[in-house]
Length: 474
Ligand SMILES: Cc1ncc(COP(=O)(O)O)c(C=O)c1O
Image 1: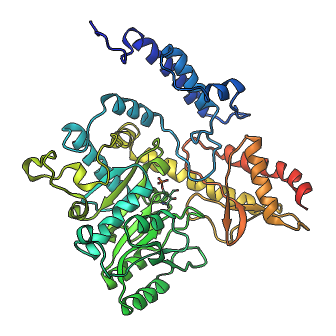
Image 2: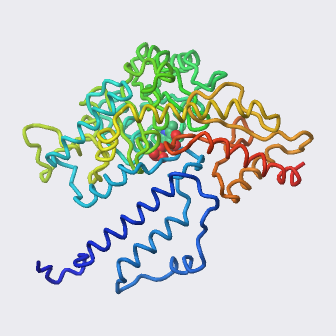
Image 3: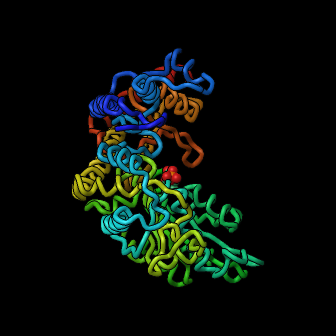
């Protein structure tokens, strides 16, 4: 076939490029099955390559693929089974294949793309069924931050109809979340013009869940003072400790005051689908909107979040436009009418391929395993006098713990040093967090590859390296 003068096609190297890439991917997948003994750090030649100026002429694609893999292999990969920092994603194999397919076809999802659009609706519906939320519609976004902004934009329009056109005038909007809500809620208040000073941080109980009684008092006071409540945000698993706010109690308050109830389940709401945790999510069927990060505990690669809403018209009320170049065939909404984004990758495909390939039960089992690992670690720590945990058992899969050193003058410095030592060592990877003003190690289990041996390795490495830190800080 004549490819003309097309310098951007791989032409005759297509097959070789695909084969080489497939070989690398296969190696990576095999490697990710088990932990590696040592991290591969960036080499001097890699540093040099990464400071080269813009190339006017290209290089052989096979060499470039090898270079790209060297970069990836010398980077922290959340897909590895002993990556316990932040809230990781797992680079699910079938999700990576979905991305390759989706990016190759590069479908435009702003308007009706035919079958891809139908698949997007189906993926939204499957996700809603999985977590048990009666969504009428929803949309895929780049992450929990954007999903939260999307939901809260709808809440603002519902509380203050016409705000998108006329702004907020003299109104004083208020937004409610727990003191341990993710900071994307504050960012949402900032970008939506609600003002971060109007975000009310509601006290938490002994299990670090938002207190509905305090929320009610705050709402009463704000309404009496002429405030306009826009939304209550329940976090169902907090980023810090995995606490699940009591949705049912918060839904009662939301109904009492006629306020939008949003669930930020970016991390934790997939656990609503598993037998041992579903009771924590009672009342999910009563909320107005839910954020779910499929790139967290649904295991697919970044970036894939979803915002689900009970009433389809609420998203359109805030996002739809009627532009000359945006046809509305048959009076239907275009996808762009319910999203903040215009051009979007086909994120739904990876979730759809996850459910189609493995089935919902396999996803439930993987989530349940992560919850079991959290309970296991909690019990093991309780048996080791060198460490302490929080007083209550993990609600989901985050288990903050810290080293206890008798006579240590600065336990926070000790635990900070221990965390850095673990990161430098490289056998396991964990991040620190400040809880009630103190430094803790904060492992989170959201990887389907993690085994109980990997969990044991975390504690063993912490114990081993803790000895050196003790010398430094006692
Ligand atoms: C509870 C919660 N909400 C929102 C976010 C933001 O998600 P993303 O990083 O996908 O924007 C996070 C991230 O960890 C989170 O834990």
